[in-house]
Image (tube, rainbow, N blue to C red; front, side, top):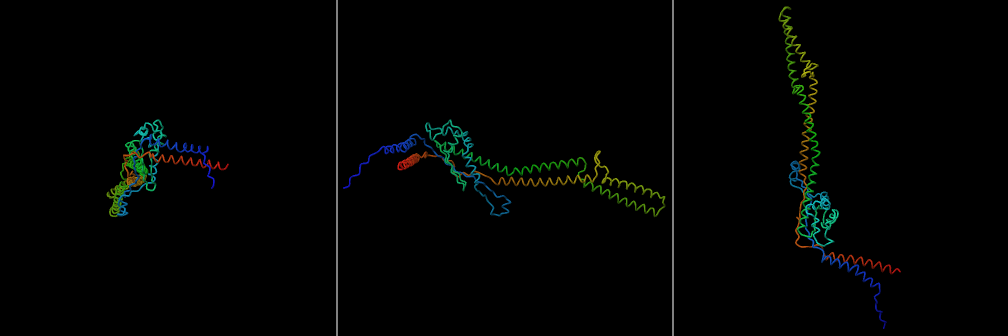
Length: 381
């Protein structure tokens, strides 16, 4: 019969391995378990879910152009706005706002002794932001734009209050973004409208000053009246010329009617000359001004063209401004809440069993890797 195997004897390295296992695996796992089950405070979670939506109401013109197919309200998510909101929820600005409203330091430092999960009330705002990111878990789907928050606190009502404050501040931020977008959409149209109003006002003032200076409301109408008078005088001159020629042919040269017609012709010619001078270099201005009708007409036509252009520009700018306002009002962002802040009835956190198991598994993995390295080095000797 073969000789029996020698009895195994525990050596020093075996005791060292056992001691390392107890010190690196068993002791940390036991300490973590004792802390989690005996010291760590219960945490309650409040869940809230929302999404940024944009409402697009079809205008009357688009409905007329597109028919009944365009009738209705379209709602679609805005990924860019959701990304902004995702970053805003983790920002220092939001933490400061909610801290001022709810006193986050008091809420999260409520446990008498919990150095791991509780917040140090003497911490700075940067510490509070870091702690905030541990207590507020964000789930964000960039494809759908859905954002869901799980807010932790040591009291269920505190968790719900913090979740409601986040929802309120997020709604305010989205409203501010919507107001900024509307302001940007209408700012250029408003600037153009203000320029058109100022130009129209200046042209109307210039036209009023012209009429006050010349005492003429419409030079074209005044010229028509003057031309009518001139045509009448020329017609009378022609009749007087015919009469005097007939008298010269039928009467004696010393006939007094010939002298009377000659005086009449001279007066008519003088009146015609005066009326013609009004269209040339004759003075007809008010006071000491002497303005020719040609100059007045040129100035009046220039003012009329400028005024008409200013009126057309004002109408176009006003139309564009109204269209911009209608378009800005038609596109509206809002925060759609699909899960209101919940009130927890049971403490689910911290997950004591899972955390203890993770601590044991992690320490065991580190210890096993250390043992593999030790035996690898030992076998190479």
